[in-house]
Structures are given as structure tokens and as C-alpha cells.
Image 1 (cartoon, rainbow, N blue to C red):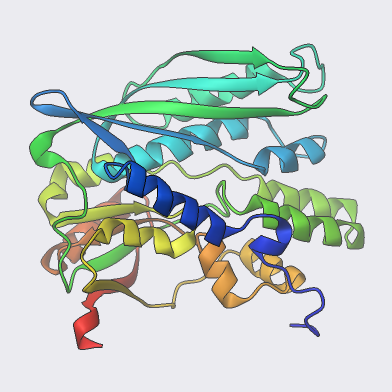
Image 2 (image 1 turned 180 degrees about the vertical axis):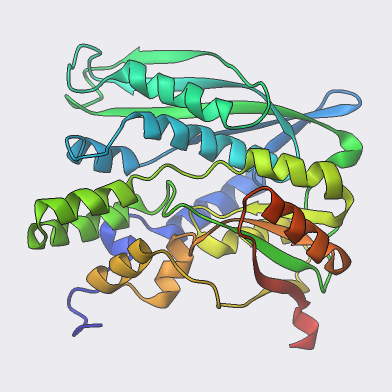
Length: 336
């Protein structure tokens, strides 16, 4: 770390997580049925599970560097699928369909191929491992609201699950083990801070170095659905909770613990972090605490597993090509 003058955090980059948390608290007071990673609607024997999400200012990083080698707008479409259905799979639900919302200044801008963006969504949907079509959406042309050359996109997905198979974290107990699945990078969160660091550093690199780094920063979010559906088909009763680690970092796991204030995650920190995380932390002089609060810390999904079933779950994940990491356990605050 340097002398402290150039230290960066999410708030100085323009995003106040405490303000967001307060908004969420106020929202929960008005709408107490909201929470977790996805919402569920009772339709008889099943729940319909839904989630909506976007990919934030990762879009702006793409727009600023779309001419770099290896950069493709299709990857943003895959990001969108991942952000929506990685939330839905946290309940164990099987994906059914997806809609999207695209807001643009003008569809005639030649340097942005919006058809490729939609094609990327369809490619992402094929990675879910189950039929899940993009059935429609909305394309809004808003020249008075969107700047020339800018766009935003959001997605809405739906899945279905039998009520007795629904995963909501209520079965999590002291001693359960946290099994992490590696991320492919920053996924789609924290890009306001990432872009701030990038803007201060890009002029210090060669073009080849910048292109290589941008490829890493724009790597699409991993889609975990196919692997998790396979794990749940064999070990559902032993998987007590699933947490998608996105904005808010590892604290996302707390959503699973709900009102049980006696339980807390006890983390181990012995897994390797991707090189781009080290680059952001070093060049932006970002503190360890801020890195864990903003980014996924190299772990994009966490399964909370009964201790007697950890070996079986890890073996299954390994068979599926994953590299699972034991990243901690659930402990009791009363014993601290």
C-alpha cells in the first residue's frame, strides 16, 4: 500500500453500500415477504420462482473498450443469463423461461450490434443444461434518456420447483460446511470501482497489456446452473442452502441465515484469488476488507452442506468438472 492518498473504495468510486443496505432494510419493512435470492409464488404443488437482474456498469467498461482484441458483446448476454439464473438456482428451481429489457438511444448505431447481444443471451441459456427459451421482452428506444452510444439491459427469469424440494436456508445448522465454486473473475459486480482503478492505470500499460487485462475484466460470469442441478439430483436433502456471491461479497451468505442470529459463517481464507483481483487491490490500494465486501473473492457460489455429505458432494462436483473449495463452516455466535 502507498501513502493513503490514492486508496480507493466503492463509496469514493460512487457507490455507497451502506446507503443501499439502508434502502433494502426500509424496503423489507414495507414488503417483508421479499428476501433471499429469488421470489417464490405458490401455485399448488409447486412454487414458481423468479428473479430479475442486470449487469451494471460492466456495460460501460465494454463500451469504452469494445475495439480491444477478444472483446465481444455476446459475453454481456451471457452475463445477464448468469445473474438471473444463478439467483434462481439458489432455491433449487429448474429454469423455465426468460424475458429481457433493452434500453437504447438508437438501434442504428453501427458500432453496437444489439442482435449479437441477444444472441449472447441465447447462448447463455443453452449453458443452463435444461430447455429455457428467451420468450420475449421489450426494446425501448429512448433518445431523451439514454446518451448516444449507451444502452442498458436487464433480464427476468422464471423457474419451477416442488414445494418439498425448495431450498431456503432454514435447514442450515451449526457444523454445516461451506463448499465454494470458483468464479471466472469479477463476474458482474463491483465494476464502478474496477473502472475507477482502470482509468488510473491504463495509460501506464502497453496496448497488448491493456487488451489482455480487458479480456479478463470482461470475462463472462460463470453459469452454475447445470452443475448445481446435477448435484441436487443426487444430494438435495443434504444441501441446506445455496448462496450466489455477487455484490456485497461473502456477506451474501447471511441472506440464508435469515432471522437466526445465533448462526454465523466461519471463513477459512486459504484459497487462491485470481490474478486480476490482486491487480485491482494493488493498483487501487483497496483494503482487504473492501475487497471482501465488494467482490466475490474468487468464489462465485457457495453450497451449505450437511457435514456427513461433504465428501459425496465434493466428489460429484469434481466429476462435473468443478474445483470445489472448502471455504468454511457454520458456527454458533454463542460459542465465540
